[in-house]
Image 1 (cartoon, rainbow, N blue to C red):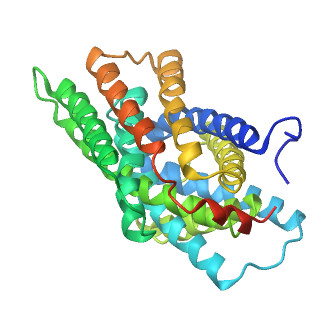
Image 2: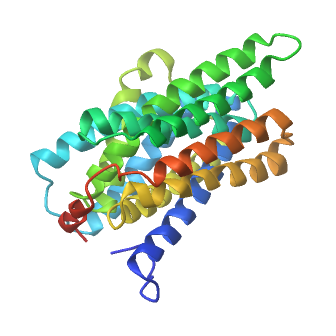
Length: 305
């Protein structure tokens, strides 16, 4: 069942609407997590958010009285959880050194990389126009990086860019796993197992790095966990009902939300190079999205409600 009824819309429009809302909540969560990361560090922000997330998602999962997932679903849950653990850590660690809108802009290369991963993992053909689109997007990312390093070299910004680009590569793989996972599991199941895997990964390092958060930080951690769970379920619901090629363009609305929230909360400023590079990335990604879908269209017939 979806988080709220969308019966008045066509299936494709409903998926696009839900995905748009999910992206907005993800962007808001990024803002909350940036503030928490500045206070606790990226590791503790992720560890404690995952701990709270397991409790909330676990209650929702138990309430739905689900059947235990099969081995194929478990493997996807574990694999995506491991990818997300490293991806999110790199992103929130890099976010400490970059404005939110600029960091999100760099992640826009992910759908382009996903095109090539789809060729290797899903055996899809790549046309000449898709290659051109990929080069356009990568050139856009280069413009953003060049804008950061024009003038005086900033070592802190360099670390942030490297972390965000590494996160973007993992996010590309995550886009494929997200579609595959949504076809074999319900949104609440995905949210629960993802938080479990994240907690196991970050919890294994707790004896060395974990610190107890101050009471004043707990509400922000809880808010981040709730935003993550709700947005994750929205995206899972959407990817179960529409192909990745249809939903990929929605990812780029994250820049609008990141720019707005970054400006309102952190007084981040948008540079000309960031806007120009983002425009090129979006053009490349939209061109790619019109190519073959990341998974076969008829795979949607396997969707579980």
